[in-house]
Length: 346
Image (cartoon, rainbow, N blue to C red; front, side, top):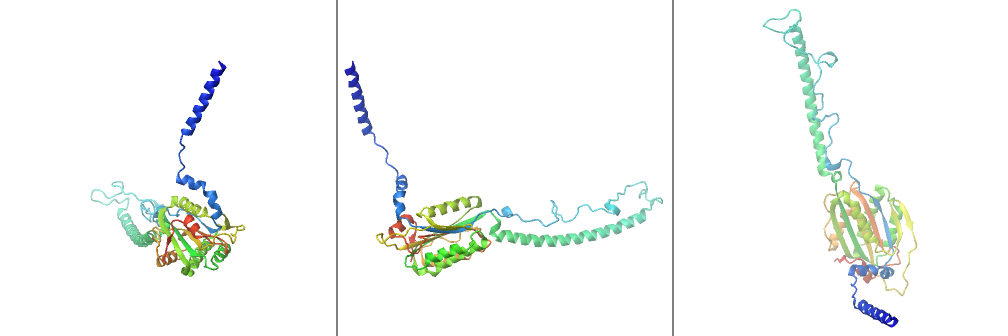
């Protein structure tokens, strides 16, 4: 009996091993495989710097509705619709009989003729006053309507449409002083104020324009979105760029400055060749600021467009660059791996 049980047990075990070996496990997808390789690629990534601030808020006059002149009522009138006559603002009511004009004769007790004369005078005065008020109101209403209409039609700040723009530039590592200049700029401005944010935007764009002879690759994208989705999309764009850094060694976001020491590669590493600078801009514009960039002239135009954004149109901005420190740069392989969408410009 025991031998029979042992034989069945060994037979079941052998059969299980055969079945397990015959099962073919599914191969991981490319996305999953790339996710698994993140830790291996991290050593090839470089430090990054970031500065910025701002946010997307709805306009106070949502929907671009025109403001109504002060003192107006729901019917559009500027004055009282039923002004009172006589003392105390009470309206005088005249009825036939009982002292009124009736049957072709004047009533001697009520003195209807003097009363009609007085009422006629009051009526003329009231008509004159009302006429003047109507004329003044029409003139004021037309002027205010035109001004308000002009504001809502031309001011893109007063609606729920905003524009998100991403402009990315790769420069040759021979661009001396670029990283130090961006670091100094990020530390010197107050990113928690609109003035400081605008200064950071303009100066970073001007820094890139001054080094146009070192441009090698670029990426440009500008799209209009609904304001309720703008913050989420902007943050996604920022996270995508920040994930390419091994560490953020310098940040100044909304006035909070943080610094940490960057790891500089040794001489045994492959020599670097590129520096990548990214501008993320959120503005109150209704239409995209630029189209795709594939030439040096188009890149210059896009940078000039960003640098000339009015102060009241700038809502949110981030400057990112990698590597952050002057002694480091990206290799050609790193540029192809981390910034695959950039195209070479000429």
